[in-house]
Length: 382
Figure 1 (spheres, rainbow, N blue to C red):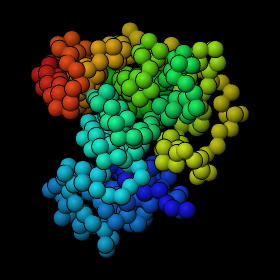
Figure 2: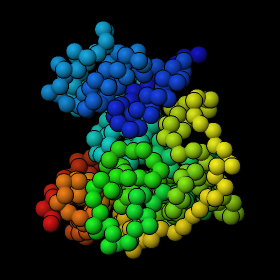
Figure 3: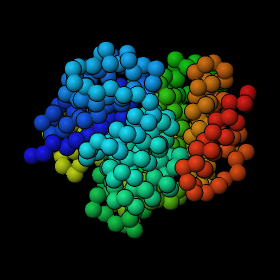
Figure 4: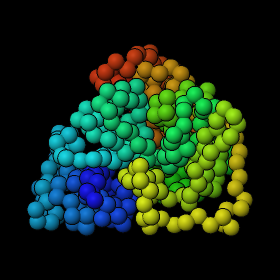
């Protein structure tokens, strides 16, 4: 059988490393034709060698020569944003996994869709910033967007073969993060290091902080709305500390379908890469004797206002989700530097959103302008 050709954007990050493990374990099924990373160039070169990949790009143009000294013979090296766009549009490829943290994945995804490439999407910000534009491009060019987030992958699997009109609501599960049982006062005093102590998942620092503020779930609410075409009033969130049920779909007859597995990002990554097939791989099996006490609770939206931001952004539409996302990125960076308290993240997001005048997602320039405005405004606060 012909191997599926894939590109991994953000190859050395948390999702990228798990994708590397999946690709390595199913080497007979995949041909990794391109890898992209900004940092960890030694690791990028190692991945290229192990996967026999012959094209790598660093987004840092100042380090192209350095990367060339590390890669194996015959491996092409390039650098910069233009090189990424050239890779995702020019190479013969079946699927592009976008795992770039933050807003850096937006232009490569739009460009790849316009070139007719299918996307396995792990970068929440792509749909949060420009969900209307991205989904229009996918439909226009006959491309599939396969979610890699564990929650959206679960919903994607539960919805397979189902009609949208049969859906009563989507139920996103959330671990609750490091502070799910903390008081507001405790969170005000929290350090960056303490906020990184996630109880379940092993993720990168930005995603982990977002999980702790529940902005991660806020981004997922917006993403789900665009990805599945479901209005905000039909998207719900439930705290599920064990992270065994990755999300659920309730149908109009009251039936609920759920997707379960051990909390391991290789599950949704592998399904996105192999879709529509299911392959054995090397994933751990779920032992029900180890999960007899699954628990659920409603999120406290007074302590964690992120969810309200998401519903407001999705209802407003247009440029508001991009503004929410950009304000959050700046606020998280301020918290990391010790410039604001943990709870200041929410204050900045709320203030920036309140100041924004929403415009339609008419084109990418409009979205990027709103993103830039939000970053500048958030940076000027406190």
